[in-house]
Length: 259
Ligand code: NAD
Image (cartoon, rainbow, N blue to C red; front, side, top):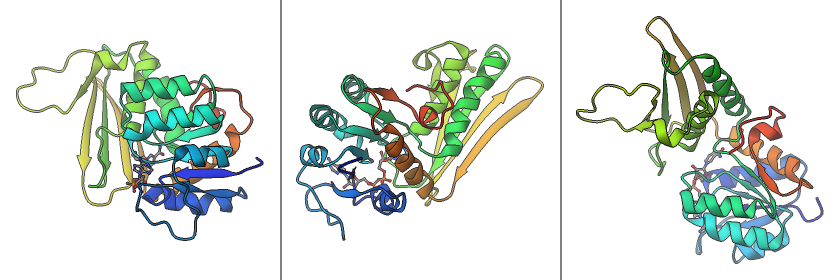
């Protein structure tokens, strides 16, 4: 890595941790960007994503879903690798990420923790073994009160893993935010429930429930540094990779789980 790593959203909760974890991993931090007027002590602030992309080999991006299209274009134009952690990206943003991945390597993960990455791989295997006709799949997540998107990107990632394991499309079977007279649960649905309270870093449970047994897989993150160390690991891994869209399961050598 000749130039080093840049951070988009460097003044944010994740950005500040990344600014510690990049040098801790022995990599060079070139600086970052944040919203105009935002202060970030002790790091170089670049004017915009294009400036940062030109100065870095890889950009770690933990900002806001609204940035996806601009960042995708700037990073693809500069040929800079992209470690993308921002969640809540809509379908137009996703299309821009996929277009960028034709020109640059992109590691895109709703959750960079090793534990959740393993959970995603297990979720897919469990779903392949536990038939949808007998086992209802429900995903419950809980996060801090500041979180702006629901269900969490990780919860959706788990839903997609279950859908892949069952050979269906999540969009066709997704059921979220039940309220009022909902009618009975449709067979094969993948259900989501989101709780928002206090300063919970991130809790996810995937439940498979049949008439005769329940099996639950749970993960609890109690320090968001786990996402930062995982993202830096992805940034070190992605250096020199051919263009393409990679998942954290690729970084950990688990295979499958492509976003
Ligand atoms: P945060 O609000 O603390 O930080 C986001 C930062 O991005 C802020 O400093 C904000 O000013 C900056 N920002 C917003 N728009 C910008 C723009 N247009 N240009 C430059 N900077 C901009 O939030 P956070 O908790 O650090 O989370 C950031 C994102 O990362 C969210 O989408 C969150 O869901 C996601 N996240 C992902 C993971 C993961 O492992 N993938 C883990 C934690 C958080």
